[in-house]
Length: 138
Image (cartoon, rainbow, N blue to C red):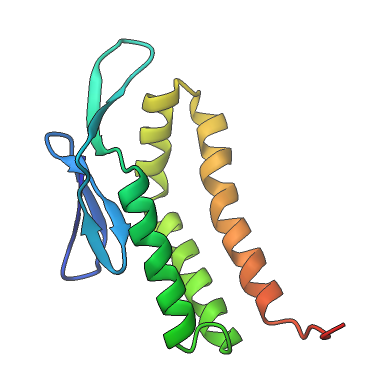
């Protein structure tokens, strides 16, 4: 399952013949280890993913620290809220695909998978609203 970006809308597409990659520092990053994603109902391989380890975790952590220190992220609540809402938009745009993948990988019935996928965008939107609230420094 390679995640690729479409130039028109940057939508992720899935190719089950290639590994899904990790998104680190604005780029798709492969891993030394790849793991099969298995449909538990049939035992069929439904995709492959880059099974990141310590190296990828360090890269992602370092990228996050640098972004926090060098960008306007920590001081710009509107930016954080906008990004969180954009993430929610992306989940909603891929709702059916995500439900299908979750059902296959976990053997969930459609309704349960739909609930889990739908709650993701709700949580991102909730945190987007929280970030806009004024907080005291007490």
